[in-house]
Length: 304
Image (tube, helix red, strand yellow):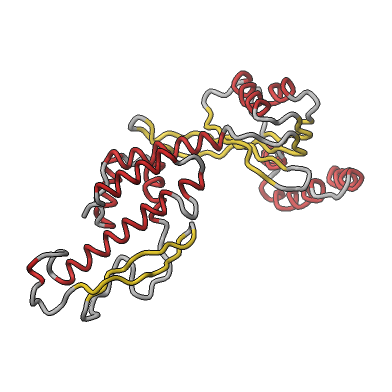
């Protein structure tokens, strides 16, 4: 089963014109329209199988059942509502599998291509999966256009303008495994999470780093400044080599402190296992204190 060439060409045209994340994944986005056409194509194929003959085929003459128009059905997915045309048969015996009669929601099929690509599956792997699970043939060129456009949207988000000042910015790493040149390797995604003066949080950027050094971190903070961040009051870091020096070079007034979680983990190296639960409970009284005086008092109690 294939999407018509007309639908594919329109889809590729819409992809080329998409400028924002909403254009791509939003309420009336390109991906949602592709999903609509894909579901309707699969429903038509299901009805043909149910009737035993294709649309407009003479085999349907005097067969005892035939197509009988379409009904409108609204279903929901993670991006909102999708209105689809469901074909009907004259006898009312057609019970579709792709979207069942009383089904109101569907899984995020429109994200599966991206998810599979992110997991390191090849274009051929994705084609085979979509064919086996959904019965839908998608060309290699179409899959590539989807993944290429997602990369463009991600770059657009990564370079968007930012607010001028942030009261607190957390810099931390998330480690994950990726497929690279036929091997599975571990990489770190360094995340900058900013907190503004109203307490709102926003991911300022994500970088997948390699061979981190003072020069690397200098480029990270220089990029933040170029995107509009003029001042960071406090930066929380995890002690990576060269990071504190780079922050001081770009934001000399910024106060840098070691991430509390990393401080606790480092402290645990010196605490016997049998005392760790009690020790961590005492530590909480320090870093959860409402003011400096309370924190110093809790520290004194811990030391004694």
